[in-house]
Amino acid sequence: RRWGSDGWTNSMKERGRALGAPFENWKWWPATMQCHRLIAFAEERGVSTVDSNTALFKALYEEGKNVSSHQVLGDIAQSF
Image 1 (spheres, rainbow, N blue to C red):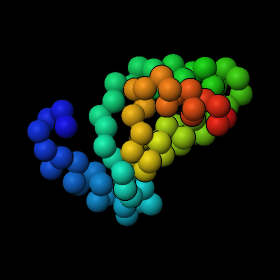
Image 2: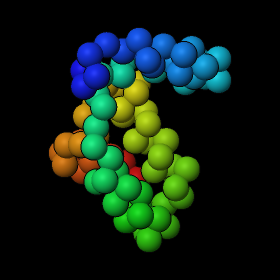
Image 3: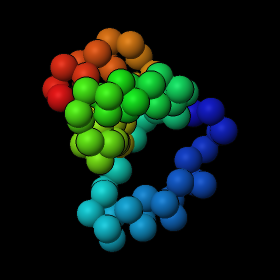
């Protein structure tokens, strides 16, 4: 983990669980520039930003995928 421990995320995880986002499998702190590009690309093709963000958040926080990976982003893009 980039900053040593994940203690700084505990309050965020707690708030997320209360709102229905359990962060069950959060393993990565990815660089997100490619995610932003995917969101813009999808939006240009009629995919709502809500749907693209939901797919990215699910992949990262619930499925434990590294959304910095071009392979992962390609798989997400194909799901739209």
